[in-house]
Length: 157
Image (cartoon, rainbow, N blue to C red; front, side, top):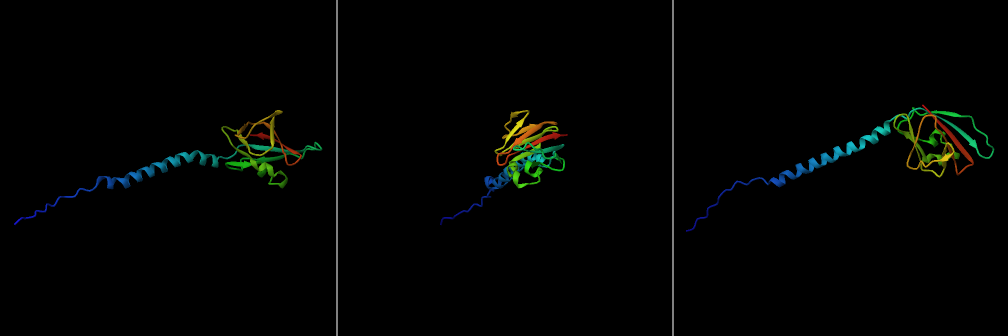
């Protein structure tokens, strides 16, 4: 008669199966930390108070008449603001909603122009499509294309 001997071999836990969830959790945590670190500058910019104030004058290009200056405090706003908001969202200046102001380094403003308006500083055309730094006492003239008006702005600290 033949006897069958069954040996009870202790099963070792599969090391790979046990470490997979741990590895994926570690990778996920690492990606989360990297995402938070990458988002910090944007969060800081969004909460940065705009420095100074801006004087706005509107000039009718047909008559040459200047409206009385309006002084707008920028330190009441965080992050960024459009020129359209500074002009109290008047419908005739709708194209200025694509001109943004954001806090820059020091006490500077960064102006970004995504509108079809032309922008001049000291009689020279400037390209603010990628951002243009405005310093204290800079005088900028924005000529609107949809209406025969221009906006003269001066930035003060």
